[in-house]
Length: 115
View: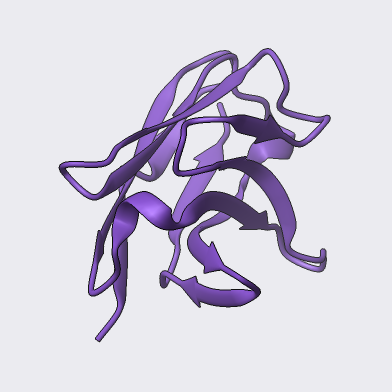
């Protein structure tokens, strides 16, 4: 059974930082492209960042130069380090694992950026 469990969300002030983690089980982690998506109220789910098994990263335009995605294959965990957070980053953040168009999703973790 595949499980993706996110952690690290919370309330942070504008300009602050936060690190999300996603622990995967039930998959051969190193061959999956791992990603972070987010969905704000009333908006569609959007890609935040993704990283291949070899470590090549891709970012959404709104988070480039502020967020960093990285992975630890032996630990089966992918991280999203977020800097200079803005109120517009407020959303539920979901972890994903994809291989040949087969997607798995976590349940999400709430990130709220507010003063």
